[in-house]
Length: 628
Image 1 (cartoon, rainbow, N blue to C red):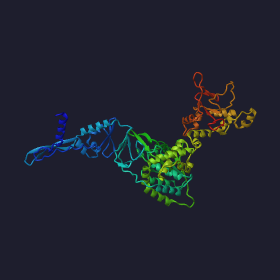
Image 2 (image 1 turned 180 degrees about the vertical axis):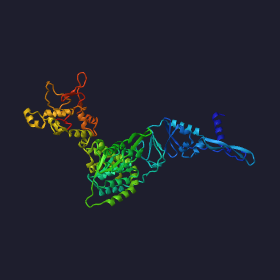
Image 3 (image 1 turned 60 degrees about the horizontal axis):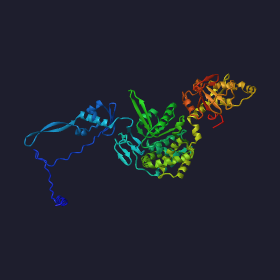
């Protein structure tokens, strides 16, 4: 028989064999039991999540998802371990059983004993939890514990943390969910988005705002709707515009803020809060903040502190800081979200504030008009429609991102500066997302920009509001005492006097000597403030050498360490050395040239020579027209 025939016979015998399966009896016990062995039970996952460890402290999410920190000594305390597991020790008893023997008598009177689980072994449980924490790694700032609010996932999509639930996409997850290094810790239940409403409801709200309030700049209703939409996104958008509603008494700014407050389900609202108070209340949350009467206070420093909070809270990860406690332990502060303020008058803003704030100016209602009842009704309707409007914004996240790109480009074509493009682009994209169901075409974007053209600041407007220009305007407007006279003159007038062409000595004396306004007198006054004027055609000095300069054209040598110059900036935002920093930002700023040996040349100012002087062009200060 060939090997192939033998293999076929074996295969046929295997396939045709009668198979009889038999259940194996597990044996009889003394009570007469028996049967097949039970299948092993699947081990339950630990209800406590280990996050990491640092400096002898161990970090967990407890049974309900709250962040808990235990020291090593607490790990062997029964009360602390039981609290970590929420009072339910069934998992601990199953994993680390502590047993005792119980004696029983059978029906035949024979005595037997069996083990009964009565508790868990504390030391074994502590060892296990510590090992898991070490396996998780070191705890640090890379672990982001998220409290209620709207946060971005790694791809930027909004995740809404509602305290007892976390809305991820269309799913409601339980707290304790971890995505990357973000952990959504449990908290008290918070409002959550409802099923999205249609664009018609958003347009109805915008129409009511347009009809019931008077705005100085056309298109302000669009800006207000943009503020509302951006507030819905919490920290999920990288640029979070801040808004300021301002106007005289009786213009309805507080009632408009009330409408916005009611239409935003998850927020922090107050009418009397300091920067520290907001930080402590909103710490760790990504929610919008609404502050009424934000700067109507005697102490304007508190109002400016609120503005500084805006600079950090409305961008990137938000405010990241630390505060010392009475126990000597530093506590970290984290605040993120849009801020909307209302006040009769906004505090003094610097350029960095103006780039983050959009100021909506309101005027009083027309004579005889009283919309108090309509304002109240709209606020009530806003509270009803707010959750659905929030749901619409979250559901339209992708449309918002695409609309922002298109609208930002349209704003740039209108002459807006890059920083302003971020602010206005976010506001317009938010308004469009709420009131439309499609991404704007290029022509639609251009039309939208024209509707708010009054809010688009040109390059010249941005420049005049910059910190450097404000410093220059302040300095040149300062009046100083003339020598041998009670007369006081602004610095810009004195510098302009020195830039005038030479006149015959007798004519100059006759014209200016009586008022102490001669060239020599003016030069001496400017020198006392560390300033020397060098004209483009400055004549040579007595030594026959040309005047020292750092560029062509009219210019100034300034000695920054002059005490009288520094005193002019006392009690201003440019006090100390801040005015010096603004000078260095000028394009014409130049330090004094070097000698052949590499040392800095001293500059003659008045009767003294000083090192450390710098040069700036008069044309950049607006005092001359001899160049760009």
